[in-house]
Amino acid sequence: MEPVVGVVLFAVAIALLLAYWLHAVKARYPLLDLALFRKRTFAVSVVGGFMTRLGVGGLPFLTPLLLQVGLGLPAWQSGLLMMPTAAAAMGMKMASRPILGRFGYRSVLIVNTVMIGVTTCLYSLVSDQTPLVVIVAIGLALGFFNSLQFTSMNSMAYADVEPQESSMAATIASSFQQISMSFSLAIGSLVAGWFLAGASQSDQHAVIRALHGAYVSLGTLTIVSSLSFWRLQATDGASLSRASPELA
Image 1 (cartoon, rainbow, N blue to C red):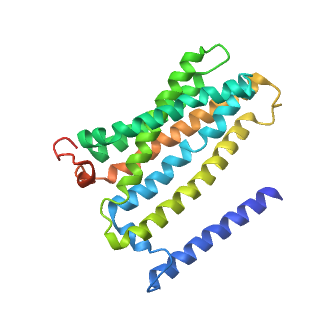
Image 2: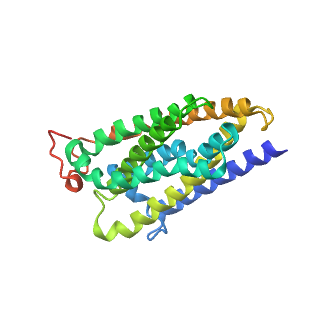
């Protein structure tokens, strides 16, 4: 009965979304003004960001499982190995503006999304024989790419938004971000569970194989999500990044 309930709830959720869409189109002052999606930069940022987060958002769930359950590391060591990702993310904040100014939003978002997917797939090579320095290097790379991605997507959303629309744009963008977090965690756990295929969680090698499959799946999903950023033009966001059309 559980699959049936899940399908029914999903159908109800889709129906409610469609119902609100029809309501918002006709309402004079809708709670969420969906007309903002007519702006290309806003639509690409929100929808493309949602797709990208589906692949990236499951990593904070999968990585501690790989380190603790798969590799058998103690919780304190697993936590320390997660720190390089956060440190790299903070460091990238200082370099994101020059990078966007040099290459432009379109090039950065397309290439960087692919790099996130490739880096995610690298976790599928991590085993109990992998040196800790390699795990740290992968975490650093992922932190750099993730930080640049989120900075680019979040700022791109407001590139063509008028001042009087900024509040509504922020509401819609943040709502999609929160929804994507829930969806990404669910997808990460479902994919890992599917690869585990009923094997005992005490079987260390089975857990590692399952998580490796999940990393490859999420990495592939992230790479595919880069296609959503091809809709951008070379000059989109130039007012924010101050990139010249020739270099964007």
